[in-house]
Image 1 (cartoon, rainbow, N blue to C red):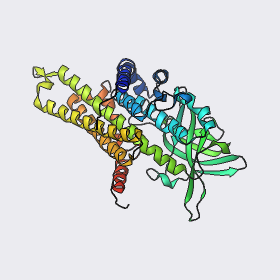
Image 2 (cartoon, rainbow, N blue to C red):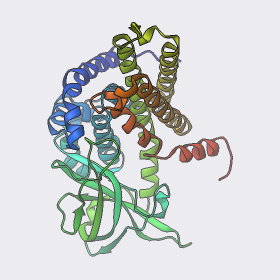
Image 3 (spheres, helix red, strand yellow):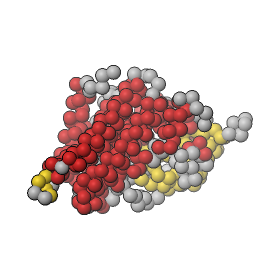
Image 4 (tube, one colour):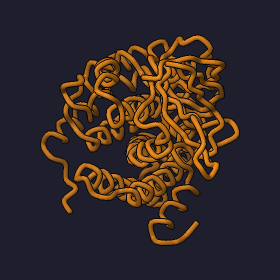
Length: 384
């Protein structure tokens, strides 16, 4: 299997690389320290077409594929993960459910603005008492005539409270099966709907320039036409979204891991101790060599999973492997990069401090490492 990029994908990679270094890198540190969403940067990403990469041109997209999205995420995360996760959540969690499961009317209404980066969509799955047990949804939606009446709450929802957030697609229990199990459906809730409350931003360890909030729904009424896909298929739909999203998170984690290498190589050449660059010490060289090896293998993992997805082949196991490995690599490389930088690695003015703070969530979000191991074991034929 040839994992070398096509000319088109390489051109995209170079374009996003230049944008990340020339536009994101000089500004993002200030946004991060102020815990402020970088609207200006997001607008530029929208003008570049990054939010529309995997969507058809007829809906305002770029006509690309999921591999193209991964390339953009990796290059952005080499510089900053807050910007990268804003793109990842906006595309794979906000717009992709509409693209895959929406009616033609829903696609025409929402996708053009989402693809242009003029609006953001969010993915309302996780609940305060649920965590990894997404099937334990407690949020309910009861049909009342031509409306759904929604009650419940969601937590840790990315892109849900920005000034340009247009909608949140939420999972809710809409009934019961004959055996008593819940029928979970997906429903589009536009921002500003009465009864839909967005809490203040969380105080987070990392991703401080991204938007993450808790949501509550108190007798929120939306039209029956806001049902996304078939009633009772919401849980299955979002499992599909999460399978694809793991590839995107893996690309992001690979970018963070590679960014740690980039910063460590630069610092090891510039920083002098005992009369010579610290990079002259074999101990430092070996640390960075191991970091580069890990980043390279993480890239091979997400390339493989994305290639299978684009080719229409089964990819669930490969996506879980890529996400498990790359998130571990991101944490390992961030720790080593901080160590190489010494005391300066603990100072927020250095990018590796930001990378260290941002890395841990990659082993948790979009399926914990333990969940990935469970999925891999299932694919190998073990019963849970």
